Image (tube, rainbow, N blue to C red; front, side):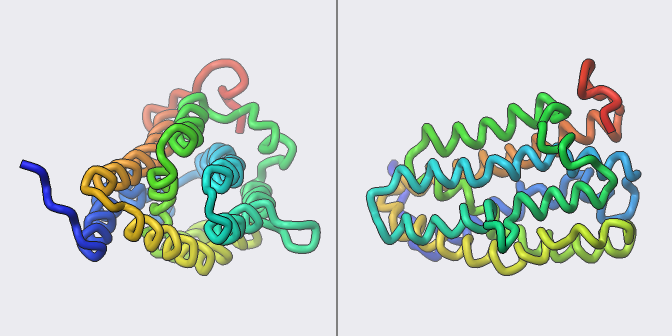
Length: 243
């Protein structure tokens, strides 16, 4: 028996439920961060590895933009690229993340080189770029819907970092910017998905795309936790002892 088409409100509630169940706010690494249980080295490992993800965000957004034949969509989506790439006058998300990494004590050029990114983090992030490249445009847009849940996590993170790691306070501008940017981006993407998922098959595909994106975010933290928390086995060669 074919499942009935969800209403836009039902689809939205289903997507929100995915985030409640699978978003990485519940990952043990984040829980340790928010409880003040990370060492400086572990916080550095997170900042360095997460930079690889940040650096690929405008790339995946450019792919999504290039796949649409709707000029209005492209104009709206372009904002995301500008938010992350910034300009000489207005630093974007990538520059702000580099300042966060520097606040932890990392060398900027070392972070930009991506030489010390954990292999599993690299694979997970590359899988995200692959998801938006090979899936439908609808699935690519749906994969961005983790932003529906990021504002609450960012608010908690700002408070926790200031409370437990005050030496990092000068590098928090990335998070304060995302408090307004992420909800705006998520609202546009959610509206697009609920209006353009015309069949139950399409609805299921966008739900699965969001699940895959949650898995990708979780996998990145798994890699960092394994290498720098428990059991604390970083990979050999350049990644070992890199921080």
